Image (cartoon, rainbow, N blue to C red; front, side):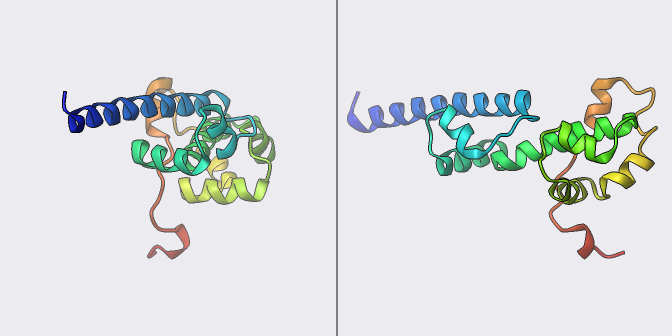
Length: 152
C-alpha cells in the first residue's frame, strides 16, 4: 500500500472511531439528561477537547451537544407538562434545568409557547395516541427565527 492510501485508511479509521465516541456522548445525554451535564464533562468522558467534541458532534448530528441536551430536556418536559400533575417549576428541575428563566426561555424557543401555556393547552394533545407515535408528534423542533420576530 502506498503512503497516500495508508493515510486515507488511517483517516477513515479515525473517523469511525470518532463516530463511535460521538454515539457514546449522545447515548449519555439520552440517559443522563436530568443530571448536571456540560460539554466539558461530556468531552472528558470520551477524551476529547470540548471544542473538538462540539465541532464533531455538530458535523455528525446537525446540532451542538448542548443544543441536543436541551432538546432532550424539553422533549421530556413536554411529556411531564402534558400529564398535568406537576407545576412548571417542578418540571424544570425534574428535567435537569437549574434555572426556571433559562428553562422557560429555551422551552418557548423550541416549542413556540411558554411552558405554562403549553401545560394549559396540551393536556389532551396526545391522549389515546401510542407513546411511540406521541414521541414523534410532540418532539420539539428547533426554530430558526425567534418567535417574537415572526410575522403575525
